[in-house]
Image (cartoon, rainbow, N blue to C red):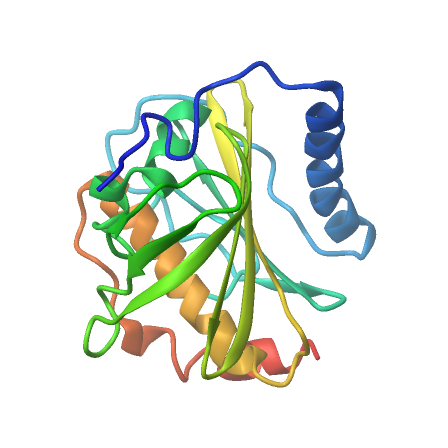
Length: 225
């Protein structure tokens, strides 16, 4: 089993093209704001002594806030986009989504050579039967961007995660590039659950209850088609 220090290759200084890609990633938030979607300000780093109130519907869940099973995802064309923010460095959040010891706490472990173009084995540890699946590393730009794809009986999955840090706060933008929107009522709640499980794992809290997400959130996502 090969485990790479930063999840998928040696750390490197971003090229001009990579910097341009990051600016494009920031355009997702701009597109949501332009469409009239309310977006919360980036939280300031500070010590917390108690839980804040749950985030309002449509607002990203933030690490350090009590999770509320309220839908946050948005359809932008055929892209399903979800955002979570963390009071942590971009390197630390990157490790949460790439280090197999840490992904095991909210999605499942993986093994293999995670170089771009390679295929790794990922276990869906929180699904019935805990199956393993093959995932291809399409892009890997530590610690800012990861794109993977997979193929199963339901079709192709094209997933992208981008990280942006500002003032000690890192924003994770998760996007699934859908082939169509017919199944968004099932897919959307699933990713809400997994991203809140990531928040819970980082906070040392129990995983959320999937029954709070599906079918409760199905109508929310289907209404955006």
